[in-house]
Amino acid sequence: MIREEWGSVEEYIVNECKLSPEAIARIRQKLLVAN
Image 1 (tube, rainbow, N blue to C red):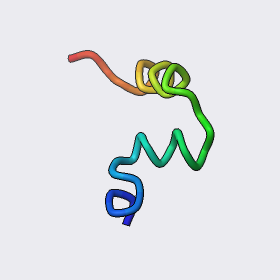
Image 2 (cartoon, helix red, strand yellow):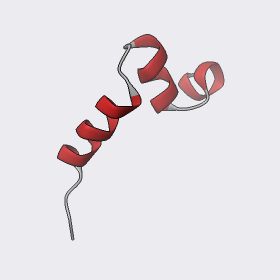
Image 3 (cartoon, one colour):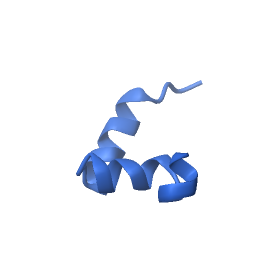
Image 4 (spheres, rainbow, N blue to C red):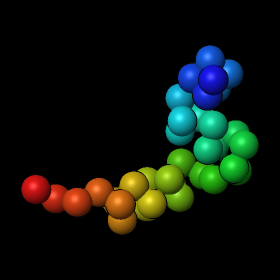
């Protein structure tokens, strides 16, 4: 459903949650774990 309407989860977050790409990048950095 998300991909059909917005194309990607990231686009959904930007458009519906009103987070900036910069905020998403900061969240992504905090959630990713280095190997």
